Image (cartoon, rainbow, N blue to C red; front, side, top):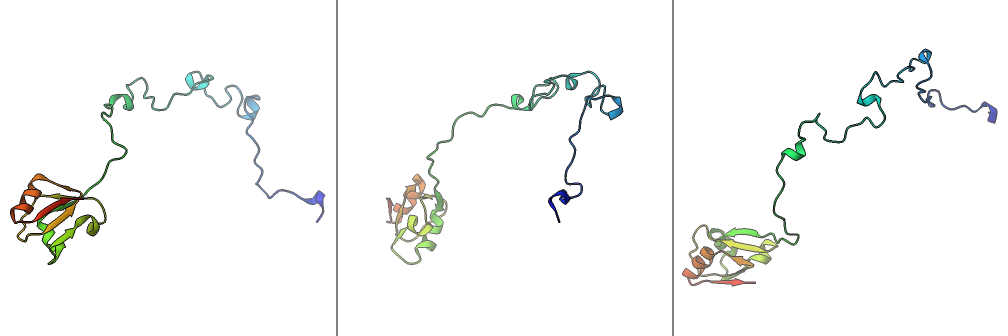
Length: 140
């Protein structure tokens, strides 16, 4: 093998299409742009979202209002009815530690044992139900 015998792989080099060089080339006269019209002219492209003069979708839809706080805290919701099962015979239960995050206690269901419940937040009804059976609701 010599340097003068080296060739690129077959069909690996593709010729660039040459337009507007006479009708014999197959791409003369209009050079592949067809007849008149916006697409035959320079700068003849439409912007994204153009719908032929109809009000575009992004203008038809209402704007989003309000804001979402960046440092929003997410709470794990636990109802009063589950606390006895979670406590499993103990007098005191730290829900933040058990659930692995910030917990808010909600007031659905009933509680029968006096238990000291520690959590990040309590709803009004949950606090009343825990304290009605001589338990404690402590905010951490």
